[in-house]
Amino acid sequence: MLPTIHWYSSYFTYLLFALPALLLGFYAQAKVKSAFNKYSRERNYTGLTGSQVARRMLDSNGLQKIRVEPTNGMLSDHYDPRAKILRLSQDVYSTPSVAAAGVAAHEAGHAIQDAENYFPLQIRSALVPTVQLGSWLGPIIFMVGLVMSSTMGEKIAIFGLILFALTALFAIITLPVEFDATRRAKVTLESSGFVGMQQMTGINSVLDAAALTYVAAAAQAISTVLYYLFLLLGRRDD
Image (tube, rainbow, N blue to C red; front, side, top):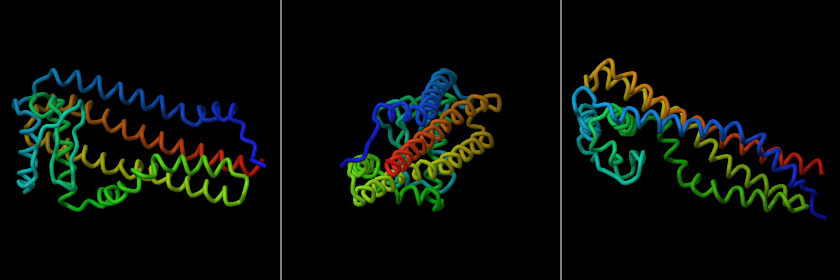
């Protein structure tokens, strides 16, 4: 006999677990878009584009071999540690704005982390293949095990839960990586003169809003893991 799963109540239970994190995610996305749009219209003190800021920051840290390239998409900026390429969206790459300087410096901060073998970044990079698999396969395995009545079903569900939990671990490890890159960006921009001192308010606004999106992602992953755990414990009660 299959275990009794009250799907109608599970939906509302899921909302109790997930809604706060989802609302935080929506707020964070709105905040980062608002800050980026506002300070994309403000020219930075030196008139350097995002690509030029990134290039100077990399060169000053002895990273001349790392390329800076444009990429498609809005706020698609990222550093690729495997290819050793820093990719900046068009709005950042070729724009001499306060927002572009902040985003470019943040991504350059990741390249510097890589060069220094920053430990949290190494762990995050090592988890990427497993997380890519576990983020979609974990929930499937968990649900299959959940509807099975045997002890084996519980073991399968636990395996799926552990597999998906790596996604939450990845999101948690991402936080110090992103916070450190933001710290490096702020210190560099403030000390280098790439932006005026009065423009640091805009830099802080853009980078702090971006950091909040990672906090929201971690909260969402953790809330989903807790919900799955709640379902698993409820299965035992049935």
